[in-house]
Amino acid sequence: MAEPRPDTRSGARGVALQALLEIDDGAYANLAVPKLLSASRLDARDRGFVTELAYGTTRMRRACDWLVDRFVTGDRPLDLPTRNTLRLGAYQLAFTRVAPHAAVSATVDLASPKARGLVNAVLRKVAGDLPPRWPDRATELSYPDWLIEQLVADLGAEQAHAALVQMNEPPSVTERPDGYIQDVASQLVAAVVDVQPGELVADLCAAPGGKATAMASVSGRPLVAASDRNPIRAGLVAENVADLRLPNVATLVADGLHPPYRPASFDRVLLDAPCSGLGVLRRRPDARWRIQRADVGRLARLQRDLLHAAAGLVRPGGTLVYSVCTLTLAETAAVDRWLYEQHPELRPVPVPAGGPWEPLGRGARLLPQTQGTDGMYVLKLERAGR
Image 1: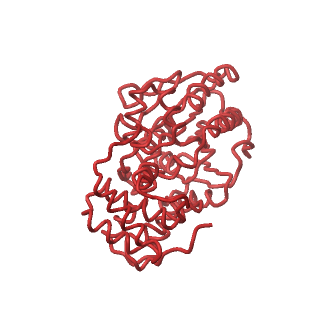
Image 2: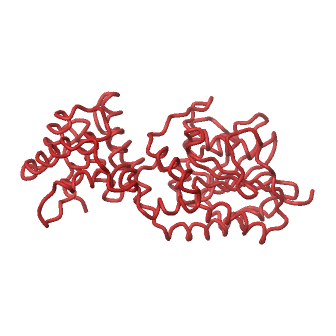
Image 3: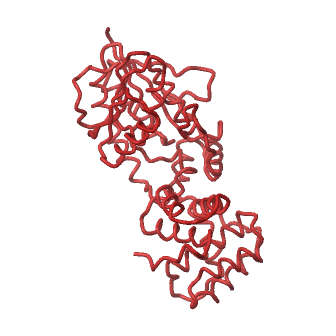
């Protein structure tokens, strides 16, 4: 467990530091930061600063550690509050427009009394050695070595580098006409499903409900069954459905591996499957440190099992859409090859040409750098017969 948390009354930097400590304790950044902000009395400007510092420092953790560790002497490891205080200061110095003297003095104030001398000395040395001469690309971009190696192998060096650079940029906020905040890439996936009036649609891994509500909002009000195996996450779907006043969405707790529906009963099935999330690292800054190489293969096996269950729900002439917000070949093109061998009754439907999608196998992918969106893969299939 982390050391006791600093008081949020120390201002925006104090709230950001508290978020860093909670993330180190296992909290998800996208849950920890909003929770702390809602409990604070900060104004809109300071709330934005908290988000920038907490997300940015988490995203650039490896780079910040390298900036700091060059000037930390002694064999005793830093305690987590001191380590995170130094990360927070280094991030301000190297990656923001905060004046160096303000970044140093305000960050030193957050340190425990016994650590203030160390924090002050180290941050002043960091400030005096900018811009840095990075030791390697992985440190500069602040990703684990394995992740860079994986994307280079799957995308090629040039495309991988462009994707990694783009995913270090803060995400833009995109609002649908109904007011729901959803990245363009996810909206494009919902559009690929192409729900028609009066159809029966299953969204098997629906949380938090963005794609389900987008599909339910088309004219003619199709009926959407939106399920998630986690009751809390299913509750998020229900909340979003209620906020958007969509009576044509039925929300339920159900395991996508064992969906509680009659076989061949849906016109459209969407499986937005659990994945490594390597296409949305700009939006989930802590994910790059959580996901491990072995997770990719484990998740690919889960995706195949979910697809096998999903395929049985599609009526003859109906369609199945598989999507993942990742860029690995194991979770995209390799899954497509498995489907081709295991489910020959599913015939590919081309993704509409002329948009941002680029072909990959029988499906298509959207790289983060193409339009500054999340990275995404989509595969659309039609079940033979009528």
